Image (spheres, rainbow, N blue to C red):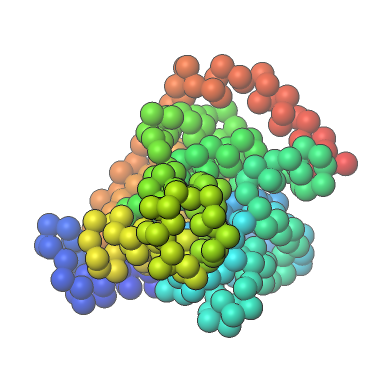
Length: 345
């Protein structure tokens, strides 16, 4: 998938008129997403008994690509995955996801079910809900606690919610415009709040859109939900008049529809597939590196897909002494121990 995504990115640079300063044409590249180096011999072969117990939180553009990659690993159902995402596969996902097709739009397929189908040979536990929903069920003992989580979420608050599962390892793959990133949170290392302090979060995209539209943020976060008359009942007359022409449209398309993107063009889109697929490859690559015991890797990685991984930023970030994970370390340890006991039971 990484090779395909890199080739698609190179094609994109030639086909789309991009300013020369915003891209670098690559004529020769060797890059391993496991060792993050040009040496393709550093990462040994995968063990034949590779059977992780994972949580896949967020099955959007990045998460669907991760599911597709992991589905290529042979398994005899010893590999297990808790799949968490609240949304249905919708029309706007057709051009950006690594899974699905128009038939799944018509069938109103849940994203967790689409990922489960891709994870052929795995034992999957799908939850059509949020990370917060998963938390309650994990602590009630009705869902397995995943010791390793791969997340592909699009906001800092959502990442904090995934962090609250407190797995032994959280591998967070991220995109932003054409940027590709990875946050690797180990048990005793910096948490996502250390790497993405609350001051960076600000107001989420969903919060800004909800404020502009006058709709509840919980509704705005349901991107595949189509606006209906019932949604307009509690709005002010002005907001109702503004939104009535858009009844029947998916929530996620309203920003462009009412001009919140700053122009009238078709610009309200998530990352194109070759960007999200490269992020997914970093996430799964780090999962493999952990399985192989590779050490000394950076826990923060970032590069621009229009430039290439040869320009990658690699950092080993440290904990912030005043972070929640340090101030509540004993509580977090007790939570992990409790969830581990429930998992064993």
